Length: 88
Image 1: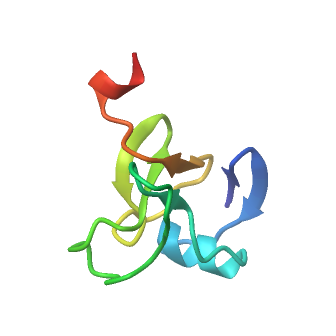
Image 2 (image 1 turned 60 degrees about the horizontal axis):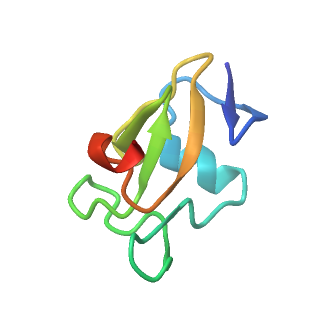
């Protein structure tokens, strides 16, 4: 399977989560905070903390630790909050 991360092709394995893919690619941070721009990545790993949010196929706020990659996914690091009202 192939996915892209910030426009760069990355090989992926069936059943692999987005967080596992990003860590395997050497990334430890893939989001920053809305205030202060502090780096965030995988913290709890079980979908509780919301620190690992990414944009997948144009949908923001996807928890990377919970989302299993699918062939052709376009994953993008997220900067701050990308809520619908914040994007306009």
